[in-house]
Image 1 (cartoon, rainbow, N blue to C red):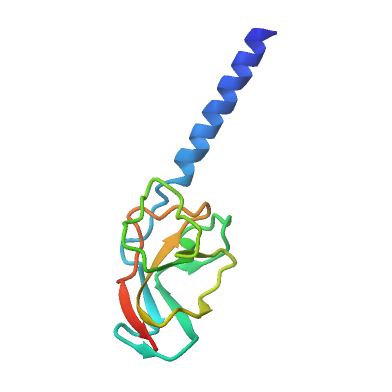
Image 2: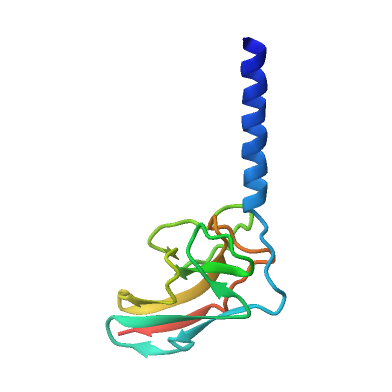
Amino acid sequence: MKLVRLVMLGMMLGAASSYAAFAQGTPAPKDASLYFIWPLDGATLKGAFWCRFGLRNMGVTHAGDTFPNSGHHHLLIDVNEPIDSNEPIPQDKSHLHFGAGQTETRLELAPGKHTLQLVLGDAKHYPFNPPLISKKITITVK
């Protein structure tokens, strides 16, 4: 009975590690690009504003969907540290997830300078390989 449990535990651990490996490093087309439609880099905005995301040569889908050449948006606000491609993209007030396939959001940021950057995540919120990351833009909120 102990041997059966050990074998089953080994199978579960092997499946878990295979799943983790599958969730990382989803390939992205070399000609894909991620960008901001609005706001533009250097924009000065008053109050809340719409932030619109653009994606070329890939599709936008829901988190959890494994359609080829598709993913979902993540918006990084005032993030300076690089994204770890071996870890899922964090989810907090500086790393916003758009797992329902959204391509825009209304943001309300404190007055001052802010940076915005987009990262496309795969079905399990991992960055693609190579990571599909927009240019970081700077905006000022009055």
